[in-house]
Amino acid sequence: MNYYIVSIKNTRKSEPYITLWRPNNAGYYWFKDMAGAYSEVEDGYHNSDDSVPITTEIAEQLFTEVTYEGKKQLAILNTETNLAIINAQH
Image 1 (spheres, rainbow, N blue to C red):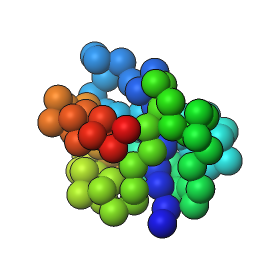
Image 2 (spheres, rainbow, N blue to C red):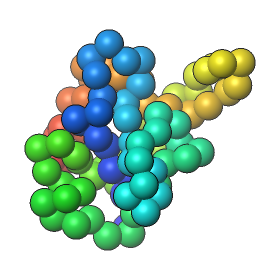
Image 3 (tube, rainbow, N blue to C red):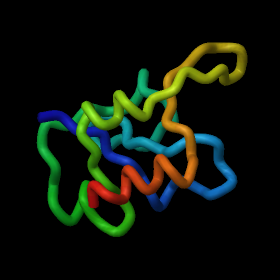
Image 4 (cartoon, rainbow, N blue to C red):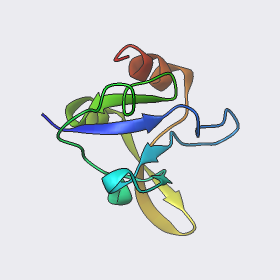
């Protein structure tokens, strides 16, 4: 099973999208095209008060097409509903 890691710490309430970890624990990004799909979750690192792993299956249901700087992207909208779904995985 593969996972995306959601950064709760780096998702500000005012931001339009949920922040995701990039591949190889190398930073953060809003959009699917640069998000890392992890095959293993490191407990206490990928799964903590600051970060929540969600299965790629759940993430696929949450991704929405948006236009950002004139380019179509897939992102998870920063809504109460989406945050509740993500937090339910924690």
